Amino acid sequence: MRKICSLWLTQLCLSIVGISILSGCSSDSDDSSSDYTYAYLQFYNASPNGANVEMREVDGDSFGSAQFGDTTSMSSMDSGEIELEFIRTDADDQEVEIDTLTITLREGYKTIVVMSGDFDAPQFIEYSYERETLEDHFRLFGLSVTMESTSYDFYLSDAGDPFESANYLGTLTTGDMVEFEYWNQDDDSSDFDEGEYTLYLTEPGSTDVVFESQTLNFIYETEYLMAIRDVSGAIQEGTIVDTILNSSTVTAITDVEADSQYRIYNSTELASALQVTFGGNDDETDVTFTLDSGELSDFTAIRYGDYRVTVETSEDDITDLSNKLVTLNQGESKAILVYEADGELGAVTFVESGLPQAYDKTVNFVNLVTDFDDVDFYLVRNDETIDTAEYDIQNVEFGETNTEVLPSDYYEVIAVYEDSNEEQVLLDRTSLFGFNEEQNYIVTVEAADTPTGYEINILY
Image 1: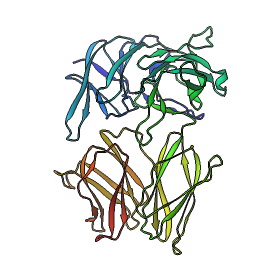
Image 2: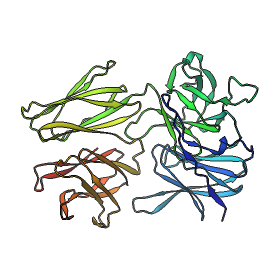
Image 3: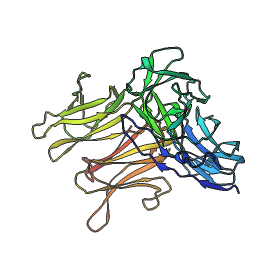
Image 4: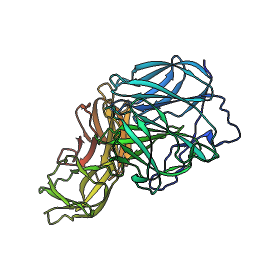
């Protein structure tokens, strides 16, 4: 079996100036030698409608797995030919082979295998470059992996400079990786100087900016790969630039002008509708609408910013929710769940997932019951019980959320709490429910006029 030593890299050391990228410190900062005595391998998942995918050697070791927009850690290996297989796990916990790929690893070179395109027939393409020891400099590569095969002109400017002062580095065509050249080379190196920059993208030949990053701080003496990809999950439109180094953490860079979105749920049992006002941002007109008991609004697109949310009721004995701060960042989707507790309105907010929901479902579990310190949720398939259920979420306190990623399947959702004798007490249970739509799901447990006094609601 091929000798493998995993190169686990130290995690991201952030230097925040707007956004500070990146994902991992690598051995490139060791200037004692310019030689890399291993071959290096990494996997990047860029299929926006896919699943979590594992890369491993056929009949051999695993190199880890990656969700959409993520990578495996980089592994250091012996050079030579290697046969790789790519695997997902289905709802029955059975492995499904997606594809195999034979590649040749070379000493001193990093190979990154990229999965992109429609997950029904994804493309696996390998890219390689020779690693170099760098001092106070970095190298920069670009790649486009969008589903629509969109090409972009890639510009970089010194931080603080407008687009008019940016430098055109090249055009990125889907599937082709390009190494960019620095516009201000010095006697020490032809590579990029470490420091702060701004990224701009335009359509080829155009000077109309379609993507602008916040300030990016390139602080590592290494090779950076910036991959342009689609978005997925709760927000369906937009562009992300992933910055990839040598660890499993990828920094997703969002357009500074990207819209955000929200949706609101009225979990109260009040007879009268709630009036919701979403506003307080100087650049936006206040939005006002009503929600009946049990109603979930559609997603509403809105400019990013800090908003003031007020929820009012005509019921005299209920105190309104006033001036709750809700922050919506660029390209972010938030859910806002309004509840009533002890005669006052309140709200729980959380960010909804940006992962694909085609195969694996990201489900947020929310406890809106004030009577118990915590609630346990069990996801029980038709051949399971609470004791044997593979998926469960424990100790969700009132007003808090927890997240679980479930394979697409049918589940009975059961909510329980433990009494003072550590005995489980049933709050509610659903019939078998199919978590099989390409949706972001929310599961709540709430007070209700039911035999137990509580009910589970599944929102999507």
